[in-house]
Length: 535
Image 1: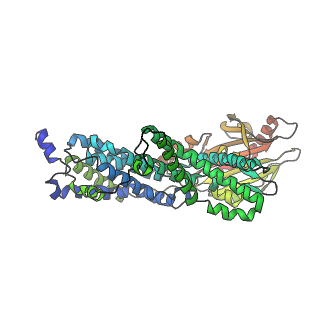
Image 2: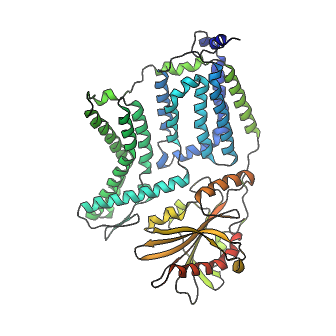
């Protein structure tokens, strides 16, 4: 068959194509066959969307669909060769491989990322490469519906908490109110306000970033205007959240803690969101005033719904091209094989619960203290122990903490003390990996741990911590993710734990004195850890 004949048979929107239902049937078969492969990711996505931070998620596909249909009006039907569909077919196959991998290692985020890649491949398959790439903006927007990986989420949450606290305190002090900031705790004297995780601003930041993205796509103005609008979304959100925190401090100082609750709830959610949106509109209006021929905002925003129904109907003109047939066959085969394949179950290792952890470790005697309910909820551990040990002849105590997780790819997951310690007002004064060699005393082979000196005012502590990962001792969060993926695939295990020791540096002491105390307790504790943290 000649190339001209191929193009004639491969026209997406032709008079002959309107009556041929084979192409549309193949398209819907491809979509239906994707459900078993990406279902694990969809379920996880639904669970994330019911949380305040990601409650905007269901709106994102709707907005992406609108952007896609608008762009379709600018991409008229034309002939598409099979060669142009090959890149889309290749991306579909590649995304299937990633999605299956995410399912095998029980990490739903990988499956959801693969699904967005699959959507892009499907568009390239249907439209051909040269026209399909014109829809990149609507596909990229789908990223805003995904939750952040946990280690990024916690880093961002803590940084936003600290920034909001600093700016909020500045606002309070600007009102001539005495105020002191310790970590994320705003001290007003008689009242203390904790800038908690919910006050970080993340629940406003994600939807505002999405809105600014759509705003830029609809904005008819210079490119530099769009860049400024997109880059301004995050600072505007942080400033508005900080203003809310500052106003709460002013009200608490003037009227008491009971008056803060109503104000807090009033300024949550849609009020903050609406204020941020209003500031983005105001920014666009101001930038228009600097144009040679400024336009009213109504003319700069291209919001048009005309003809979108006709664009949806174009799905009925998809041709039964060879590449579409191949894609449908691949999808059906992969979905069928995955459906009948027995579900891989993670091994639930046998271990002793920390409730049996002895408070008598050699000559050390200890006692346990529970975490505050809010902190325990954020920790999300399946089991944990927090104990403080002392020993006759040693002036300062040594703390021991460990949190165990059966699965590290769902829920809160392990996060480094580098993330949570600043919230309590502690600053990392010095942190370095060090090698601990206690083999002669404890029987443990030399291993590496993070050693941090933390400071809060004039107080100092030495902290040792590492991530116990099925016999490995790791010091890096990213390495933890990588070995968890590998062990999930090869061993069927995702369990792991955080281990932390600490001791204060007393007046007149050096940090080396605290080092010796910690290592003295480690000699007694380490040999017993495998009973609670299986290798």
